Image (cartoon, rainbow, N blue to C red):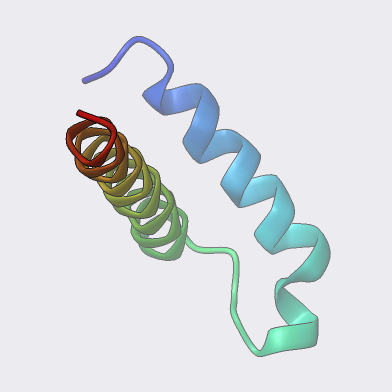
Length: 62
């Protein structure tokens, strides 16, 4: 369990509580974990893509 994992899941649950009804999503522990994991995967993918682009651009400048 990550240091801030519970905190992030709590924030996600708060968002689901406030906005989930507009999207037909209930605030359940399973949904909070699911959306928390989606955010983590998206952030990781974005970071990896950024690193790959920096490598490509640095090689083109040589």
